[in-house]
Amino acid sequence: MGRILLCDDEVKLTRMLASALTTAGHSTERVATGREAIELCSREAFDILVTDLRLPDTDGLEVVRRVRQVCPETDVMVITAHATTETAVEAMRLGAYDYLVKPFSLDEFRMRIAKLLGRRELQARAGQLADQLSNLHNPENIVGSSARMREVLEQVRQVARTDATVLLLGESGTGKTLLARTIHYQSRRRSGPLCELHCAALPETLLESELFGHERGAFTGASEQRIGHVERSHRGTLFLDEIGEISPAIQAKLLRFLQDRQFFRVGSTQVRTVDVRFVLATNRDLQQAVRDRAFREDLFYRINVFPIHLPPLRERIEDVPALCAHILSRHRARLSEEAMELILRYSWPGNVRELENVLERAVILAGGTGEATILRRHLPAALTGAPTAPSPGSLLVPGFSIDGLERALIREALARASGNKSEAARLLGITRRRLYSRLKSMEADEASEQAEVSDRQDPGPSG
Image 1: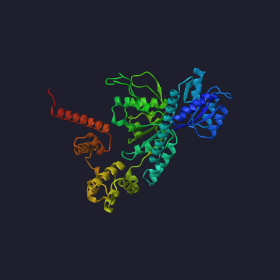
Image 2: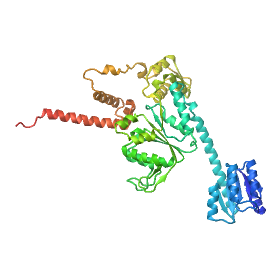
Image 3: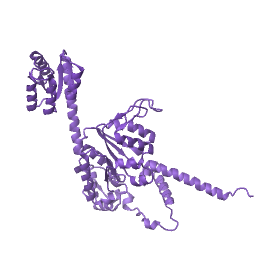
Image 4: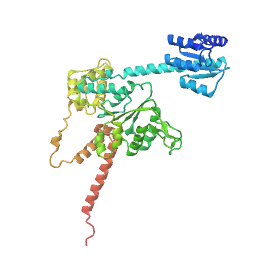
């Protein structure tokens, strides 16, 4: 139920409105002048002020303006018997939420009040949820006390308060998505939407539609209009993961949008403008990609406003015990001393994500939840008995071929993954798109080698 202030010099009207609101369970106050309304709102909290535009001591528009200044949390509804388009527009511009023309029915008035109070309740709940998410995604809650992580978290605190574009750099599994969410929920945009898009998971044609949306009939299969992530992120944050994998055509369109925040839906000629904060992430070396002409230099400088480098887990191994305790606390499980030693000795190429997976598996093998103790036998062979990886120096012997090593690694990964390319890409620490590109190059190389062998075996007709 709401607390409502009625301001009108027609005593009979305000008495009738107050009676209708009281019957509906609301609390009301009545005043006859604009000065009284402004003074009362400055002293007491009201959900809604209902004011006439013609008052004996002042203009109702001035009351709207002053009340929105002294008590911005109070919504204003304007009522008048002398309605014009100009006064309605001006009242809304000054902050009025609704506009009701006399004469009106009590049922319509009660409905408008109920609608306005319902909106306020939704806003309050959204604010509470945003606060809860903000507390959940607080840098203080991110596990990491090493010097490298303290530096990262301090950068997150500083940049979250701004609207600056953030570029998160680091290997797969280091926590880039977690930091992106933390930046959003610690920003002034936390009550707005957070939209996330994994760029490497979509082909070019679909990625453009997912980003900017499309009109019905824009292409085959576009049976209805679709709003893209850019529009959904209005007054919020758009997180683009694996930005280093997008095609040159999408790079050009993204650059144009970043420059002026304007875009076209696919199949539309209407320019649309949005207010979006960008957070981007990649596990690629974008500077090297620029040198290789795989990534636009102008786009790189446009997104490289505030880069944050996330260290791999092997470079902050002192955080591993705390990470293990945090992950295992969800299962009420613990590590034996031997298991912890093996975990600390491992290099963790998959970073925190791999650590989570290893511990989840170990908890299951140890008997699930309920004070389970993880022992050596519950850990994968990579931690307990697999041979260590050869050093780069040991590989550099006569006859060594980096192309041959790459082909062997890819074939081994595909074999271990039973032909599943997504799983093979994960084992290799590369994206699925990059694996497809490597496989295509391998096929081309093998075809070329076979052609050369065939030419040598068949010298052609002799003269």
